[in-house]
Image 1 (cartoon, rainbow, N blue to C red):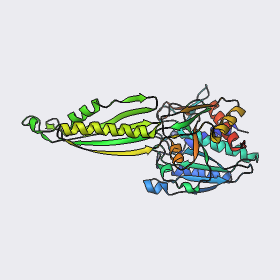
Image 2: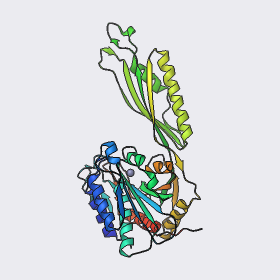
Image 3: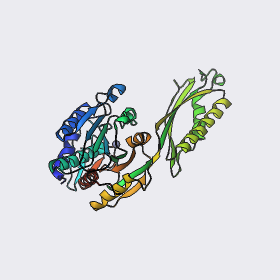
Image 4: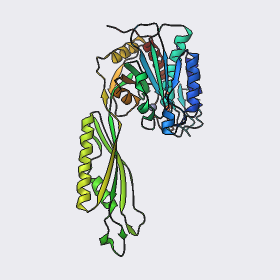
Length: 373
Ligand SMILES: [Zn+2]
């Protein structure tokens, strides 16, 4: 049975370990120790050294007694900043909060503690379970870096649950977007702002024109565009020769995102040519969209697990990427589960203990689930 006190203690132990992206060593060591206690064989990959970090992704496997293909459970080891010296406090209303100077780190310590407590419960009562695979990633908050380089030939599961979502427990994201980011450098021509402004080509002005012609925000129900960075010029007495801006496009439809990016480039091309400037545009695919069929086993067994613990399941789409986007690229059908983390990436982040218990119960049921034909 899930032990609430032990679950909270697990959360507190995890929160006490600083683990900004690429600084996950201590947390990885702690998790390895815990998984060894739970009789898992743990392997660490080289993802850390690829990114100059100090820990790799942790993969673990344990054979079960219940028939059926293995199931993968995943959460990420890292947290965003400010996440050093987190002091967790428990409110009278049953919330876990930080002291307000740091994040709480429920993203993703809630996911990690739910998985560990579910495993602990199964272990102590020697209950039968499915073949279990675990993947705890590094650098998720730095645009899914760890899961990008993991060697998926290790994974036997075709079905995954990623515990890394805000919202009421029972909620699961079954579709997520492509995120395409772009960096544009516009090069004009410098000249003295007082003596010879006519001789300059004003890069900042051109960028302002470009941006004013690009529609931003929510473009349709599955697509957004944002320009979130701009930098240019060297001094107030100089017509600026260069200006850089960065943005992103997200859409649940990958082709739509690509088309939108082409349209953005067309506008950049037209404006820079018109003013005699030049530009360079770099684009990168942060993650690629996926959608899981509602009839698939991964969703069906999640819904069964929810009902077993009297929680109503709720399938939704999200415009946020997660490690699950990378899993999908490797043929793993996964969904992302809400797991007691609210107002994430802020110092107001909180976790409701009752919700944390619920996701732990669901995880426990999933680990013991029987496939229905
Ligand atoms: Zn997260």
